Structure formats: structure tokens, C-alpha cells
Amino acid sequence: MRAIWKGAVSFGLVSVPVKLYAATESKDISFRQVHAKDGGRIRYQRICSLDGEEVAYADIAKGYETEDGEMVVLDDDDLAELPSVSSREITVEKFVPSDQIDPMLFEKSYYLEPDKAAAKPYSLLRKALVEADRMALVTVALRNRTSLAVLRVRDDVIVLQTMMWPDEIRVPDFNVDTDEEARPQEVKMATMLVETLAGDFDATEFEDDYRQAVEELVRAKVEGGEVKRTEEAPKGGGEVVDLLAALQRSVEAAKTARGEKPAADKTGTKKATSKKATSKKTAAKKAPAKKASTKKAAKKSTSKKTATKKAS
Image 1: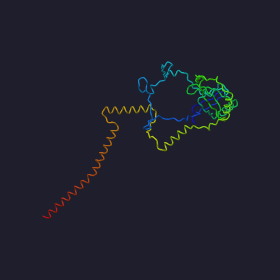
Image 2: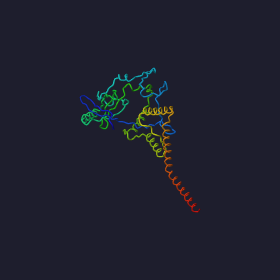
Image 3: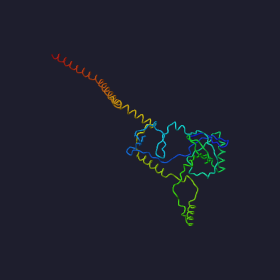
Image 4: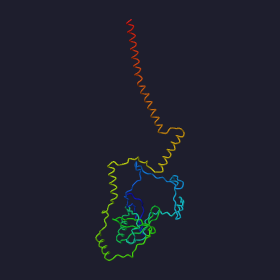
């Protein structure tokens, strides 16, 4: 794993230098949108909804849409004035009972690894959390924003779990009818069912059947040769590739407008020229053979003349 953040946990006068690692990863199956005919990737352009023109990244700004549907455009100067936090400190605000925090507030989990010199205070904090059966409610600056989070212990490792702000939890806008009470006999049967299905949680008992089925399906298609061999897109940023392609097309168009042949034609001309040159060289090599034949013919005619003179 690669550390994504470095800082220190601060509680009281104790400071524990730590590294932050992402504790989870998504293994959800994702599909690409492709052309069914040849498997080519479908690309999307940044088109302005008003003038219909493609917009370069440099011309894209951040916009905040109001409740009335109006758009407020914010530039870099506006964003620079917003409060920004770059602290490298995880500050413990208080230690709270573990059962007081609704799991719905939890967002993303990270592992905390202590620096070599901080093994002892790290172990002290971990044991204190376990013994007290509490979580440390902390504030931490991640991605230039202050986040609310908790520190808890999992398998001897301290985990930092970021939280949503309380006003981000939605209130259900429907009512549940609680006046309809179940009969004692029904409650008893439901309780028996709960007891029958009771057990301890073991995450290894459960598997993602859908993901496994998709992977097996893809594997079978690959082994059966059902694969679209498409050309790989050039590596690099999409904007640079698009710009280079546009410049290349522009150069070719300008040359055509001036009456010059495209690069491909020039290559063809070179090939044709080299072909002609080869033919001339071959012809030149064969030329001596023709001279030799002429000499033989001359020799024959001389012999004939000599024979005629003798006959006379």
C-alpha cells in the first residue's frame, strides 16, 4: 500500500506521527460503453449547451446553480478566497461511547500506521480506546477541507473513519404507520424466527455472486476467442491527444489547399521513384550481356566473310 497522507494524531500533550492508507477498495464490476460492431470505446466531448461548441479544459470554470436555476460562475480568484485548511494534525476533540455514533454517518475508512519512533504512544492510544470502549471524535484536514472523523481500533490497528456532517443525513419524508400493532402470538412467532436465524457475523461467509458470474462469463468468452481486437488509444491526456490530432489535420488541410500532396502520397512517390531507380540499375546490369551478344554476331559475320574469300 502507498501512504496518501502524513501527519500526527494529537490528544492532550501527546503527538503520534502517523501515515494514512486507504483501508478499502471498490471491486464492483464496471462496464465500458463501446461500439457493438467493433468494440471501439465511445468518447464524449465537452459541448456547451448554449452554442453547441466543444469547450477546452482551459475554458471550463466552476458554476454554482441556485434554486431558481441561475448559474453563478466562480473563477480561481473567488475560490482562492474560500477558507482552506492545510494542517497535518488529527486533533482529538473528545472520546465518545462507541454506541453513540450512528453508522449512517460513517463515510470512508483509512488505516493509521505509526512512524517507527511513535510505536509506544500509538500503542498507548490503541489500548486506551479498547479499554474505555470509546471512539476518539477528531477533526482532520483532508483535500484542503476540514472533515469530522473518528478513531477506532480494528485488529490492533487504529482506523480513521471520516464522517458525513449531520445536515447531510436526509430525513425520511414518509410516515410509517405505528398504530397497527401486531398480536402477541405474531410477535412470539417473529421472535422465534429471529432466534432460529441468530448467529455471529462472519464476512467470509458471503461472496459477491454477481461479480464472480461476470468474471467467469468474460473468461469463457476470452477462451472461446470472442474478443474484439481494437487499436489502443494513444497514451496521455485526452486534451493533448485531441489537440495533436486537430493540429495534424489542420497541417494536412493547409498543404492540400496549397496544392501539396499529403504525407502518404509523398511516401508513395518515394517508393515509386526508388522502384524506377532499381529498374534502371537492373537494366544497366543486363546491358553488358547485350554487348557480348553483339560481339558474337560480329565475330560470326567476320568468319563468314573469311570463308567466302577462301572459296573464291
